[in-house]
Picture (cartoon, rainbow, N blue to C red):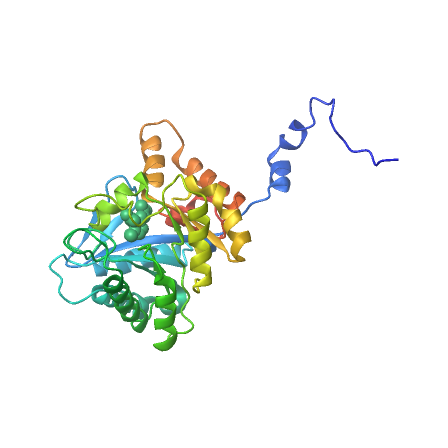
Length: 329
Ligand code: PBG
């Protein structure tokens, strides 16, 4: 005789019963997170004395070095432990890829030491004249060797300056192996790589590009970032990064990549995070400003959804608000 299973229920309260009170909903909740799971991006701009609000990204600024240190101090007091640094060199900067970033890393680590984990975004788009993430020839064809050499130089400069981790976002083939090898051979075998391993060509990076001065001056990034219509390339890109030595993987943008988080974790055995990118965050800000949504509640909602989808960590412009919204430290 076969074992009988419940195939239907006649009770109209079967689902509603457990949703009735906050106590019951809390007992049934399957996702949770603390401020330790959130990463706060921070923009530091060469030659900037004060700070400038970033259009659309409420509560986020482009900082000169000193105000950046003050802001990080305030964030640490709010329980933020992970920061992702975007160092924006002056366009006239001739001091070499990563030299300004190294200066910022040095200043931050001198002040905060082991109180924070400082990830550094590794990319060329704030440095190249054309705003692209690669060095290209006159025909806009990527010079992969020159690009990887520049990414390696940037990586070694920030690692020597004390970066706690690096986070390559350029999407060049072979970069993770190249950077892992450089770190290993250059005295930094313990520095982890949190790779932008599945990064799509997306319309949701707009506010970031104005903040980082990295909007492409010609064309788009579609010749190196992943096409949103592709699932195989999207998962394969993370698999390659994992095989090349990435410690942590990432999907980006976050909300448009929810379906890929668990498949990537299962394919690689690595933790996968989600980057709630500038356009996603700015969209929530805009809804809130228009009185069409409760911004704070909507923000928390998205973080829970990232966790439910399997994200280990969340990079979000709202990390510094989390504690005030009731997220435990
Ligand atoms: C640089 C980089 C970008 C973002 C993170 N690193 C922009 C891009 O690829 O064009 C986007 C982050 C955001 O929108 O919040 N390569």
